[in-house]
Image (cartoon, rainbow over all chains, first blue to last red; front, side, top):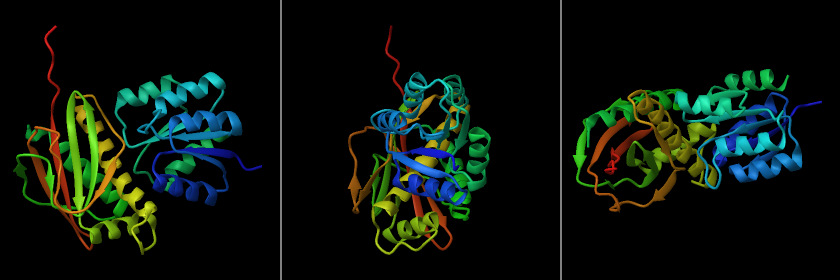
Length: 120
Length: 159
């Protein structure tokens, strides 16, 4: 069965792009969240296999949402997908339980590679 | 405003646009403006907070915005709708985000706010009392793209 993915990004363009890449690669995009708070809510509802998570978002940022999701499910698999790649942010995300960290702009292959590793 | 704050934005813009639009921007001559001011038709505004704070505005014509969005979406933009606006905003977010990574390498830890798009010419933003440095860029087959950087080091309060 296709792995179920929840996409989190405040930019419509990013959600459309990610959905296209993932759907073409055979993943099932079950939900799209536009901020961290929505991602936490949808995670509880949908129980996806993997979450992609932007960091800079209104309402609740991606790092906070990652921490909240980990509280709900310690085994949650979250991949950060953000324009900011400074070391402190990567370390913060990984220490908070992120499985991978993709810096935008990315090539579709980079996303598929991360997904196939994390979803396995 | 220090010129050293500008180079991360230039470097990030070149990197992001080369990857995303498959065009390497040609850099024009740097100039200064007393305030953040833009005569462009489409502007992406990103706030910067942290060790350095202020604003960066990416400005372009409607034609250039259409062409950039078309490349990002992989199909021609007929009307500049929400999806096209979101693509342009995301370009600003990516350049700002990559700039933050480079500024971090210089010892400044900063964060960015989600981008805002302002359409309409002669936009003047006068909330900040920071002079702006302007870097014009030319993108082949797309048009002009202007970066307005208006940031300063955060004032440290005495203990």
